[in-house]
Length: 331
Image 1 (cartoon, rainbow, N blue to C red):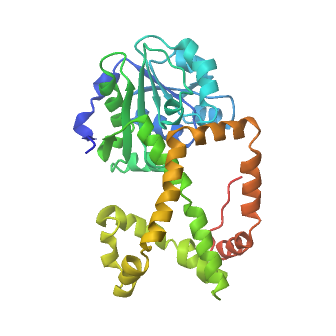
Image 2 (cartoon, helix red, strand yellow; image 1 turned 180 degrees about the vertical axis):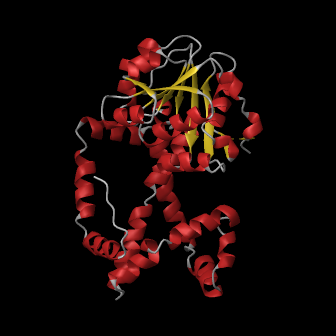
Image 3 (cartoon, rainbow, N blue to C red; image 1 turned 90 degrees about the vertical axis):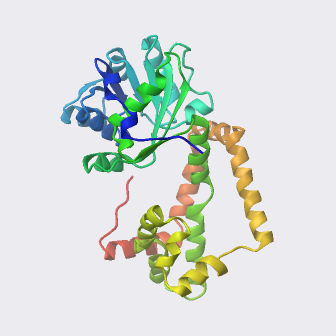
């Protein structure tokens, strides 16, 4: 069983006299920087001179280019996107690291696959919130906290865990719980959650219901537009994955527990498919594929996104969302 950490386990005094650089002022960077500051931690922000840089300045932070921020700090939160992190680290972070400092990732990806070439004389930590940046901030402000996966990848100083727990407390996660993990485990779970095909399962269900005579509106309302799924997900947090079914009708309980089961052959086929995804994560197949995709300018990602957004469901979905006053699309 994994070790769990709570608020008494973190001691902010380990950050006394130290400055934390938050490198990348996006959703996570902004939330974590603000939470640390509100916890009494000295924070500087490092970012390219774009809209996020201006936002950090407007929020009252000492804000610099990444390399300058690193020079002014002792502990460095690497919160730039995974795909640019190795380059940013090599060019703007590594040259200015000093012995006894720490780098902190919120995703294990670049550590797991060896894309960060860090020296042996710094601590390497992971503090990975299991919620989006807006949740990191809102749950800090309301005092409830949020869960995180945390781990020490490299303990060069002998007190890496204490620094990790102090930072975890500073961003507000220990109010809820932090679970001992590793970069490899976080990467496996995170990528698997993204790879197993949940979005396609929902679209497939929509297609088959419409094929069977349901209106597009009824099909989409049933699966995601109503928000019922979010409500059920919230109840799962308190009652458990299967424990929540007692809050449904007996007809629903029978459908979820009995009719929804796969046959033995179907179950084994699905497990075989999912094990293949896991193998590709563990052996680096996916990481190599994704690296090549980025180097080529993301042709497959752009093609598949264009294909999915041209699906007839998307137009029906937009119309319904606009009628309900819900429509919003970024990019």
